[in-house]
Amino acid sequence: MESQQQLEFKFCKSCIFPIGDRDDANQPLNGTLDEYAFYTKELSASEILDHYKRGILRLNLTVRSCDDASCNGESFIDINDISPQNLTVIDNQYFQYKVEFETDDSSYSPELYNVTINYTDITAPIINIEFPTEENPVYRKGGEQFWVNFTYTEVHPKNYTVKIYNSSAVINHTTNVSVVGGTNQPANVSFYLNSTAADGWYNVSVEMHDNASNYTISYQNNSVVKDEVEPVVFANETDYPAGQTAAKQGETVTINAYVTDAGTGVKEVKVNVSTINATRTNVTLNQNGTNRWNYTLIVNKTGINGTFNLPIYAWDNASNFNGTEHLEVKVVTAPPPSPPRRPPGGRASPRDYDGDGYGDVDEMLAGTDWKDPCDPNPDCAACLALRPPNPTPTPKPTPTPVVTSTIPPTVTTPTPTPVPPFPVIPMYVIIVIVVAVIIIVAVVPRKKRK
Image (cartoon, rainbow, N blue to C red; front, side, top):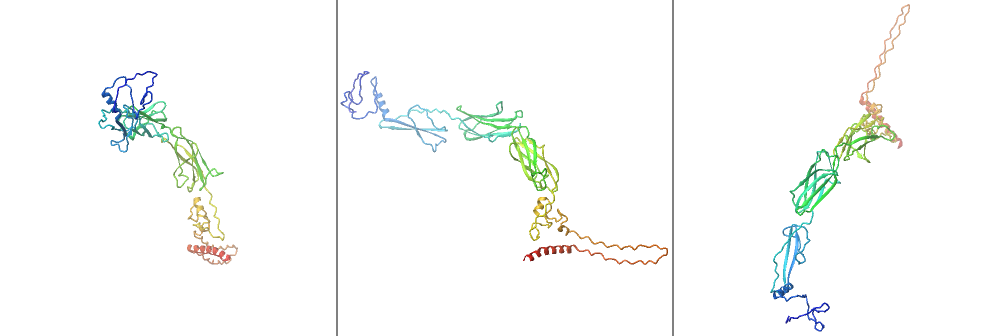
């Protein structure tokens, strides 16, 4: 400004007071106005200088929130340069601010006298209960131990409390005041279910407070079960082949059990089948519908006949056990299997190892010895060939009757001619003869077909 002059104005409510021009609009200002002000008094030189500095001097303020002391990876955020002001930044352990000094006149510089920062934590703790949960509950009897496992995220934790409760009462709880801050910190608490607590479902809750009075409560309802009652096996039956009331060797039966548990539910049902099955002892039944369990197996124990009681073992999810019931299975002796159908030409089945006319597979299913030609038919040719022949007995001489006469006749007694005994044929000769006959019988039809 090359010159200045003091002007006096009188204002009125209806007057127009132009800025940058005369009231007659004939001499507009050749320039720009960045700000203007009206005062009701004359300003001093220092007040005018302060106004001037406020226009040419600037302080640029930026801040950042960091999870480490070096603030690696975090950038400064430009904020409003008004003081004071409330900032909304990420809740971290470290906070930095930066002030940049700017001036349009090198004769003057901005000045920063003090900075005051107040911190208020508004973020509540984060809690995640991992076990037990509603999807994966814990089953216990009275007095048995279990653990509550959870993780939490909180920089400044104060304490946490874990409770086991239902709608009627809290049966157990514990509080920990020595808590380490961090992210996804693991924690666990051990509990024993009170023996006096009623059977049924219980809930788990974890409540955590931080040092700024923020808190969070996390729940897992129906995640703990107390059960003292064993399962009940109150009905069972055995399914035999169609039209039968008992099973034979090689046939399948289905054993059924009807098991209930009013507490934690049935976990497993087993049956001891060693009296009717040669290869299995305890079998685990499959659940088939509500409270029904069954299993299908082969009756293959050799030489059994009669009624057999198979013990049933049932467990619930709290490990309560019932082994007082049994299943009834009836088994009858099967008749000898029918001889296998021989192929044309009279040739024996290639799977008849002992030559008794019964297939090896048929004998295995029937429980007879597939290597013994005398089992099951001791009258077959293969079995008879193994027996020694019975020798022909030597005939006894016929005695001559004595004739009584008044005159004693002269009686001549004939001397009997002894008959030589039938010679005994050695065993190996008989085996050779039997083999030769079988070969002749098998070869002759082939020649005829040629």
